[in-house]
Image 1 (cartoon, rainbow, N blue to C red):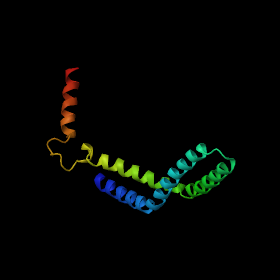
Image 2 (tube, rainbow, N blue to C red):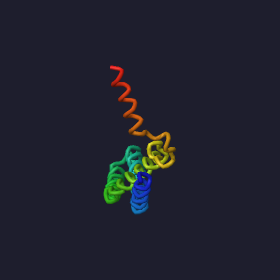
Image 3 (cartoon, helix red, strand yellow):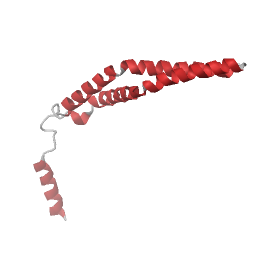
Length: 119
């Protein structure tokens, strides 16, 4: 049952990731362009050049802020990563454990009863 819930959560996270893939790419490109604009701003010697780079930076910054909700897609990618790591967790494989290896409450009772007799 837990693997089924992990599958459903993974499916939802995958759909959210795919829905936000375009904005994630635009956010990444705009952050990269902001870095390039900042480097060119630092290299520029003239005042007109610096003003031009600031205007270009503000334009690219507005594109970055317009796609800030793409962080939801990054969160969905992280959720997929966590679900993938927990998929092969030993605790979730209750169906594959042999019945003899499962903890039997009667066996535990017998152990506790034996311990109580010794005191």
